[in-house]
Image (cartoon, rainbow, N blue to C red; front, side, top):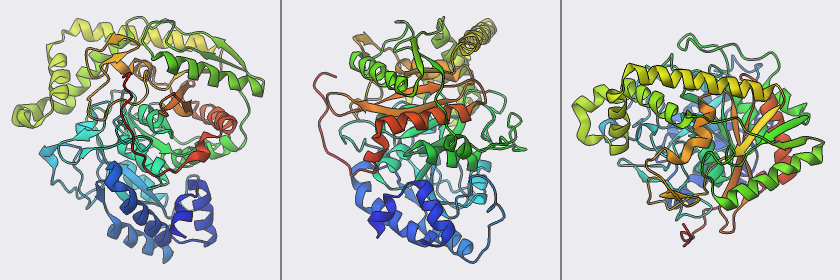
Length: 482
C-alpha cells in the first residue's frame, strides 16, 4: 500500500483524499517510508517534520482548517516539501548556511501559510545551495544532494532537493524559488517539471528585494497537471508583496484540462549561436520540439537578439545580492561561500551608470520578446545548456568546448528569460547517450501561465516521459567526456 501511494500523481492523490479513499496520515506514512528508503542515496530532504505534519493531518481529519476547501488548488491534506530558503514555523530552516544552522523560525513565510491554508501538509525542507546561490545543490550544513538518475551527478540548483524528492517519490509536490533558473534547471536535470511563474503570480512575502522582479517562488511536480494544481494553491494577491495580483478567473487546472495546441511556436537551440549549448542537447531538443507538429503546430527556428542580456543580468543580480548579503558579509564573511562574496562585491564595485545601462538593456530585450510573441504563441529553448555534471563540481567547467568563467555562466538560457519577467516551464524531452535527462524550456507572454501549462501538458502526453516516475536512485559514474 505505501509503495502504491507514492506512485500516485498529486492529482490522483488529492482526488482520493477528497473522497476519503485515503487519509492524509496514510500519505504521510507512505512518504516517510519512501524518505527512509531513498534519503541515504540522495540527501534531498535533510530536515523532516513528520510529527508536525501528522498534527496538521489530524486537524484536517477532524474537519478543521478547511476554510479553503472549495477553492481552486485545494490540496486536501497532500504532503509537500518546502525549500530550505523559506521559513516554516517551528521547523529548522537554515537557508543552507552555517550561520543559520540552528535557526528555528516562529512564523512561516506567507507562501507556506498560503499552501497550508490550501490543505498542503509540509513534511520536509528540501536541500539548497547556501542562500540559493549556485547551479549545484550543496552546502556546509547538510552536504551534497545527488541526482537520482545517476548519483555521481548533480541535481543542479538551487531547488535541487525539491526536484530529487519528486523524482524519487519522496513527495508529490515541491515548492521552490527561481532567480537564474533554480526551478527550471533542477527540473531539467531530474526529469521533472518546474515552473518559474510571471513576476507577481506568487507571493515572495518577506524578501527585502520586494521591488526587484528577478527572484520568484513557484511549483515543481512530476507532471504538468500536478504543477497546475500546485500553482492554483500558490497563486493570488498577498498584502506582503506589492507586485502580486489576484488569481485568474479560470484556474490553471482548468486551463490544462481544456488544452489546445498552439498555432505557432519559435524554437532556438542556442539563441542563434549567441550562447553555448551542448551539441547533443541541441539535437535532442530540436527533435523533441518538432513533435508539436503532430498536433498541427507550426515550428519555426527563430530567436530574438540576446544583445548583452547576460552581462545585464549579472549587474542586476549583483545589486540583489547587496540587499540580501552585504550586511551579513560585514559580520560573518568567513562563513559565507566565495561565490556569494564575489557576486556581492561585484555589485558594490558597480557604478550607477552600469546599473542604468543594465535596466535599459533589459527593457530593450523585453521589447524584442514582445515582438516575438506578436507572431508566436510560445518561445522554446533547451532547459539547460548542458546535462547533469559531476556532483563534486560547483558548475560545469566547459559547455560545447567553451570554458566558463563563473558559476552563472552556464545559465544564460534561463537567466535571459528571467530578465523578461515572463513565465517559463521546464519539461522533460529525453535522455542523452549517457542516460542523463534533457529538457526544454517553454516561455509564454507575461501572465500567460495557462497557455504555457496547457502546451506543456500536451507535449508531455506526446513524450510519455512523466510515466517513468518515480524512480529509485541509481548508481553511476561521471561520463568521461565531461
